[in-house]
Image (cartoon, rainbow, N blue to C red; front, side, top):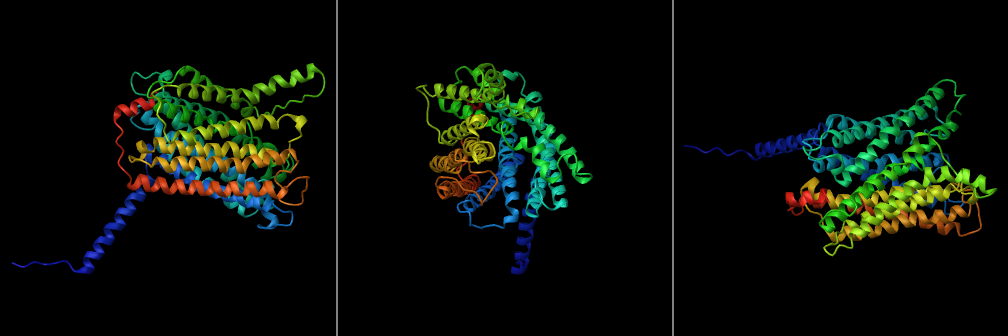
Length: 506
């Protein structure tokens, strides 16, 4: 009887082959995923990565504006960087982050066997990701709105079209899951509040993004041929710019209300008071769709006769302030629920609450921006509005991942770091936004890095903004590392089915 031992080389080769096989299998599983959790993880992870890059981009632009003589980047790409910042905040970070959370969480909440049109959602992820890469390549090669290279401008149109198509497919999948895949016995009014907010946000995107796609088509056709009807490259923003400002940007923030209300429901270990009021609040926030679909921006001027003021005030309030009322309703009901003596603090509540607060601040700023007497048009005030809303979404996303993460990944995440990062993220958002509210009143021009002047500490406001963006990049990076470590090797989640039921039906 003989024993034959495998040689070291054979063993090593077999181990390496097995490792490669395992790695390739894992990659292939994600590339062809139809599991809603995996699709959601991909969207959340890539939006976090893009959030870090976008924050660094904002820090560079803030530093560039500290002094009129500073030249951190080439002057020829400044216009593209400002446009890229707006695109990235909305379409590379905020929208996919909220949709990713919806894809991962909604099927669990409504008791669906699977995500509706899961493969379409996965295809939508690929379209979105490839589109973001194309748009980024366009910007880096003098493309995008105002770009000097015609071919790269056409590439921007193609990339943005793919991003729109991808987000539409994902939104359709989320909306269909809520509407048609609920477990037996669950009516639409009984849908958990986060799923309800995801439904409203998805339908809102399904209503508004096709309008953007239509505008993009005729601008792209004109640019490819005559370039005489829609202002060629320089006129792009005039036709699609509404999609990068208020009220359209409010739509991507709708799920933040659902995140906060869901966390509060878990904290109080009972049903939300006036549950129907939460639904109404979310619905009121979605009135931003009206202004986006009609591509209308209603302003108010408090000069002139009372009748003239009233004529402009009524549509101004309808198109700009109803959505603010919706946020206030949800915030009020959530704070009312916390009076429950059984309420127990959840670390995820801090970033979620602060995130909604930042979104609300941005929305109020958007309403102020449209008071023409203040003369804030074409100033950095509008950039402050955008950053408040989108960084508020990021903060809410941190809270959502901390809250829903154990159910998505199956492992717990440490509470103390989440609390600290939430507070740091709040500070970062204020630093990156509030100085531009002040500088806007001082007439600092938008999308201009140097060659401007006004009475005031130009260096101070722009230095604070640069520091805020840099701090947000650090916050997202640290949370990404915390989440990756916790969900890979952390304590296995002990949430029971009863706890899950309570958290989703609170």
